[in-house]
Length: 375
Image (tube, rainbow, N blue to C red; front, side, top):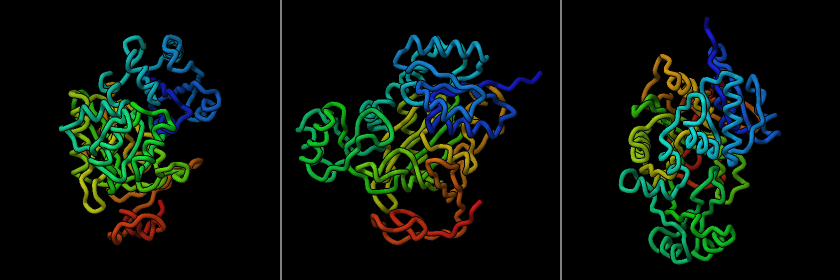
């Protein structure tokens, strides 16, 4: 008798888990979804995507958290757990041997390293292209960064997501004030500022082999006005791309981080010049999808479906290993609505990149000009 496989999604109140759920609901005949969250309000928000939703302890309370997950696994006969966000990825990864169901995660060393951008930088150094970076331990580190790479200098924390506390400093005094304000010595990185496109790559691996991957140009972020840098981690407008240089940089980064990649990895990169720049890796996430990846599903690549099938050892028709999405598909996301998809029917290169003040469909910084058809 056929039984739908039960998949447990942690952090169901967040964008990442909801994107996974919406992707898997395209195949609702195959999967039954269970959700958990440690916030009762967020749990309510995500409950519409799952059959049942459970309030669980925060992952930092490790023993209680793992015990409750195992109770839900037993009660719901869970076949696979997919954790998000970072703290739950870390906890499930570290204690995977104590969780009584399947996981599909990289090595814990890779997860731990990826969640610290300074450790990632050191691990990738000489193995994948990166922006020059200094750990800000004192004001001398700031002076070193400016003399070597600036001005300006890009500041960001070594841990966390969504561009939290990032800042573009034009002067050493500005940088020192920002780090001091956040009591951040030892926790901030100072990097050379890269002026090219902001890119993202997601790849799915199985026991060291790449299953599928796709690249994306992140044109604009949601609520960018609330961030000093305009980066919030949630993409508002993006375009699917084919880039051999991005594929190469991302795959080298994953290989440097994890000698036998297994599960999902996302790589952030920025090109080092406005015209035809080299993608330089700025961040790697091991073991989780990025917050706005549901646009991949909308554009035609349902990676969570392949993730679950691979994790459970079930056969599936494999998509292309690289460039699995057609290029030039524009996706537009809002806060409270489904993403819209736009197809570029006529592409031509916009004029020289300039910052600010130009609409998407009339060109802009590294943005193509095109006519669109709504689907």
